[in-house]
Image 1: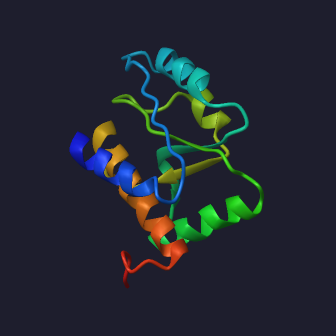
Image 2 (image 1 turned 90 degrees about the horizontal axis):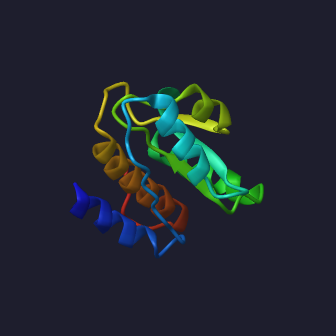
Image 3 (image 1 turned 135 degrees about the vertical axis):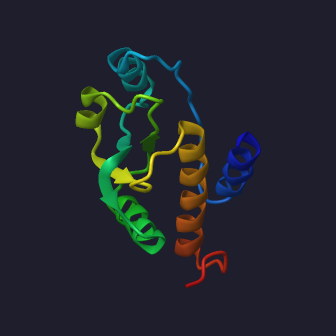
Length: 133
């Protein structure tokens, strides 16, 4: 998992500056949520990954990223919850909720899928042949 995350993180860096912050997991969603909220960089547009979030296809994610850029949002913060999901406080702080699937994944799997989909979306925006329909 880690190797795949690092692979896509390196690929993404050709399109965007990227940093990954991890907070300690907790069986108490509120405690973990408070740590996540403290880790959000000031001025970020916050996107929570949530099974009840909006479904997008890859071109749709590329269009959404482009729209955010056009609107002047230069700092995006994607939040992947731990084993017990995201607290209500984190979900309320989010500007947008996106779902990767109606299936449940571990947070490492979710991070890998997110990294690959972000790379795919930025590749689509750049006209790269990585994505084909």
